[in-house]
Image (cartoon, chains in turn orange, purple):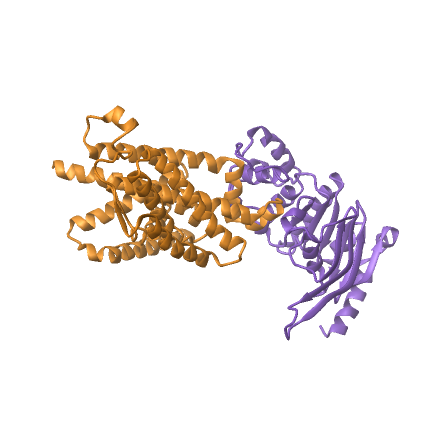
Amino acid sequence: MNAMFELCISTLTQGFIYALLSYGVYITYKILDFPDLTVDGSFPLGAAVGALLLVNGTNPYLTLLAALAVGAVAGFVTGFIHVKLGVRDLLAGIITMTGLFSINLQIAGSNLAVERSIDTIFTSGPIMAVMGNSSLIYRKFVVALVLAIVVKLVLDWYLKTKNGLLLRAVGDNATLVTTLAKDKGTVKIIGLVIANALVSLCGAVVCQEQRSFFSTMGTGQVVFGLAAVIIGTTLFRKMSVVKATTAVMIGSIFYKVCIQVAISLGLPSNLMKLATAVLFLLILVLGNKRKGGAEHA
Amino acid sequence: MLELKQIRKVYNPGTVTEMCLFDNFNLTVNDGEFVSIVGSNGSGKTSMLNIICGSIPIEGGQVLIGGKDISKMKDFQRYRSIGRVYQNPSMGTCPNLTMLENMSLADNKGKRFGLGFGVNKARESYYKEQLSILGLGLEDKMDVKLGALSGGQRQAAALIMSTLTPIEFLILDEHTAALDPKTAEVIMELTHKVVEEKKLTAMMVTHNLRYAVEYGTRLIMMDKGGIVMDKGGMEKEHTKVEDILDVFTSISIECGN
């Protein structure tokens, strides 16, 4: 029973950590209407930079700031390629993602372990002051929960500012942004910068949580993010009281729970990506069905 | 004052489908004029508006506003002094934002879009007052997403939004064409009111010859990238729909339409 409870806690922890990535995908996919594949590169980028800084003795919280910064640069590169060089959105993301794979290898090699002796955000700083006596699994849960909520609140605030309003407008009707005498390209770049900063932050937190970086850890992250966003926004379509960011956070948890259930039922890890793909397809089809149903009603 | 000088516009240059629309096209619009522009499809009406707004590039010539050459300016830079309402009602508003958010965006045109609060509640009564000019009850729909409104309501909102901040020019690109006759009539009447009240210089492309005759202070008919009729002042006052219809028909027959 205790093992079961701990499994639930660690699954929820995963959901909260990956909510950070889902917020990023929410910005590009839902707000900007930009299918951004940079995610598969900016996620491990955050992890690589985080891992390298950690093993070199940097404060674990500072590594998170560094991850935000490098993710922002990755988003800027995709935005620049798309807006200034006129490359299609999907291809711009693929180009950055592909380039980042080599860059990540340069930064941290094909894998980099963070030794037990090195402190992470889960074993140092404020969490030790508050919950120093609790076991690691609960500390991870609380840190992940706090991160997911703080970032959500900051994002909610940003989307209500003038700049955030303009960001929402550009995905809704780019022509209007132009007639408001604003460069829609710049607004798109800002959106990509914020989104990939969050994705990279998520990579750094994951790296601290599992104490390792793998060059392949980015594969499929964009699909996860899209699934979380689509599950969340579909589930809460009718409830306007639930903010989209909250819906996305719940989507992320829901998805992690589904995967954990599949593993518990004995799904071989080799079939993981196939299960992910099938689950994603199911969500898309069911989401469309509900939409169609609503239109015919 | 708006001046188009020796404009040259070629579509698909260097290909077999190359088509020269404007070659040495000139037009001057004085401050306070409300110009109605008519002409058959392909005569260059919308292209002219797009050239003024910088939506399409030109091969030669100059666009001047108040004597200042804006030909090198990007489209979004030109919109600092230009407001525009499109034929498609969904082009002028954001469907997923509420009326209040849409109005707040429009209200901030020309200012910095920084990290201040996006919706200014203190301005809400001003927005309501502006929307109530329309007489469509839109002032009671401040929290409704624009996507939930009808085309006519959205176009009315777009008209108010495009003229909410001080602008020098209002560009109306067949802005009643997608509306039913009654709504079109309402929007046209509102346009007249807004242009009068805010003392705007306006250019309106329309296929409705009656609107072109009834509204505005000057009437221009275009054909094949040139101006074939230009009536202002008293001459415009005495122009009847039949007069321009005759010219219009003769042009159309030449084209084989």
